[in-house]
Structure formats: C-alpha cells, structure tokens
Length: 453
Image 1 (cartoon, rainbow, N blue to C red):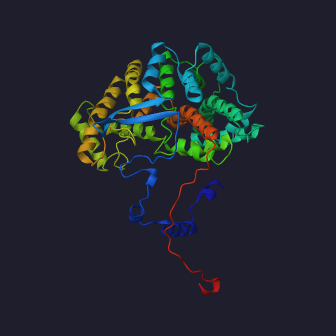
Image 2 (cartoon, rainbow, N blue to C red):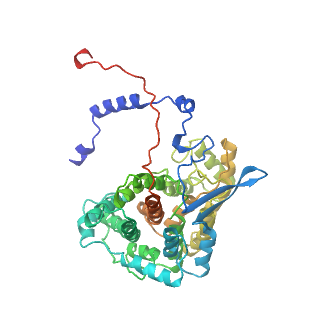
Image 3 (tube, helix red, strand yellow):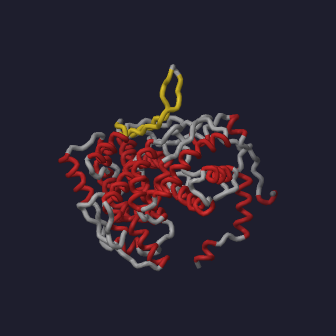
C-alpha cells in the first residue's frame, strides 16, 4: 500500500508536464511590472511590509549621508543581543527563560519575576496523558519537523479553548508550546530511532527545576548526563535562534496566518512548515555535510591552498552537492558580520577543547577567514559576505551529540518564542488580513464547448 500510495505513475508524469508548461512565466515580465520577487528589491533588501517592537537587525550605518555596511547588530526589544548574552554569561546563568520573558513582555525580569516565570514554564512541561504512546509512538516519521507539526496540530484536540484568540488564552497556549516543543522534538526522535533504526527506546520525564537547555540534554541522553558547558552552549544557541527581525520567512508566515484569525496551533504548524525548508532552518545541516565532504577530500586541513582549491571547486559546481554554494557563508541582510556567529564562535572554541575536536575548530576558522575572499574573487556581489549563524551552529550541535534529525527542531525550540511574540503583536494591533497583490499575465482565452475541442 505504501509503495503504491507514493508511486509517480505515467499519468502523473503526463499531467506534471502540463502543470509546468501552463505555470511557466516569462522572467522578463517581473522587470516589466517591477515585481519585488521574494518581497525584495533589486539590492536584496526586504520590502517594508509591517512594523514591529520585538527585534531589529542592523547591517548598515549612515556615513556622510550614505548607507555603508557595518558589523551586524541584532536587538531584542531594543537591547543589543551581545549585551544580553554578556549579562547572563558573566553571572554563569542559563538565559533562555530570561530572554523569553524579555521578548514576550518587553523588559528584563527581576529576580522574583524570573523565578516565577521559570516555574510557570516548568509547570507547563507536561504532555496530556498517553500523548506519547498514542500520538508520538504511532506511525513515527523519519522527518522530525513533520512529527513536530503533527504533534502540535494534535494538541488542538486536547484544548477546550483551542479557537479562542483572546490575548490571555493565546499567551497561555504560547507558553505551553514553548515548554512542550522540546519534549515533542526529543520524543519524536526517540520513536524514530527505535522503530526505524532499532535502537533502545529511552523516555525520560522532564524535570521542572531544570532549564530548557538542561532538559533537552536530560531527555535526549540515555544516562541524562551532560556537562555545564554543554548545557550553557545549547542554551546560548537557543537564544540566538529565538528571533530575527520579523522579516524572516517563518516569522512572516506567523503574521500572515495569524492575520486570518486562525488558532494558535494552526499558526505555529504553518511556521514550522516554513522553517523546515532547507533555505531557512535546514541550512546548518548542509554546512555539516559540506565539512564532512571537505574532511574526506582535503588531505591537509592546514594547507590553505588545498582548502582554497576545494572551495573554488564548490563555487564552480565541481565539488560537494554541485549547487555552487559555500554553505554557511553570506546572509540576506548581514554583510560584514553576523552578530550571532560572532557570539557563537567564542564558545565553539571552548567546547571543541572539551570535546577534543580542536583540529576541526581550526578548520572551520580557516574556512571562515578564506571563503569570503574566494567568493568575492569568483562572484559579483553587491555586498560583503561573512559566516552566518548556521556556519557554526551545526558544528556545535554535532559536538553536543545531537542527531542531525534534531538540528532543525532545536532551531524551532528557540524560534517558537519569537513566533509567539509576533503572533501576539499581530493580534494586539488587530490589522487587516495580509493579502499581497499578484498581477495576472495570462492572455484571455475563449471558452470552447466540449464537443468542439
């Protein structure tokens, strides 16, 4: 049944060719009608589609009346992410719950507020009775993002106020999802690992007193053991993935779907569908696989000429996946640097030392230094190129022994906070349904009756 269900028959191939021919639009028409493809202008800048108080990306500064590239900055509720990270790192604290509070409520919590809020999230870290057995363990998917979406949509059936979109109820739903997504992700992977790979099935109960990052490692590892540095770096990665300016694909999806008046579960599932795409949340997997290929082909990792040759062949579509892309390099907004990559890099070195993988870290560092020069030499680019957060995050996850199947769900654990903030912002401002315009370019046709065709 499964193979028949998935089969592409000759009829489907025939109709597919019809679909391709009738949907192909002359690319010159986009210029004729000044269409902002991908909601971007000719310089790659996003079209202004809304306003937000939640976060801001800055990649240029005004010098003598002109906009010039600068080191990238990321602000959460107007606060520099580098200052936020420095604050909880210097105090040797986990920051996920604190930064979640900031993004949802607009200010940093004091000690009492943070303690109460952390307890609230910990209390929500519990799935409905038999949910793991009846939902997650049945028909486990090889794709954890689909498993996660299915689980979230199923939670709708357990919520007596699922369709209530008043702010208190949506806040309650969002806090529950922020707390539950780590469980749904790890349990989904455990089910897949057991039924598809034949590994032992280990299901741990979450611990309310642990931080979100600690709970993920506790749930994932059979012995529940982890180092303080491991948990701190996972905590940091979650925070850096929480939010990114509102204009990214999945967050824009949150606004679009929320504007229709639909329920929270449907909105979050739609955003997950966006994040799953390899052009968005799956990029760090490509980086890891590119480096795996690099380590097999480049004999001397310290030989910059050999590395340069390999990277050049990638750009010429002669190496790795033949797509012509050095993954982890460049960003839609940042040019000189990605602040998230800058922050992560300093911690990656410490973790690589703990894990005995310093040689790999030096390989990453070398590629980060020489790849922008090679890209600038080989390609005409309108702005600078630098490592983005995906360049390091996959390496971090591999050192934390996270399976690649969980790389994008872990991204979703952090981004669920940003989506929640944007969903509530859309509801509070009560705007119109988001409906962009598309210009029809199909010539008029005359209807012909069936017997005359």
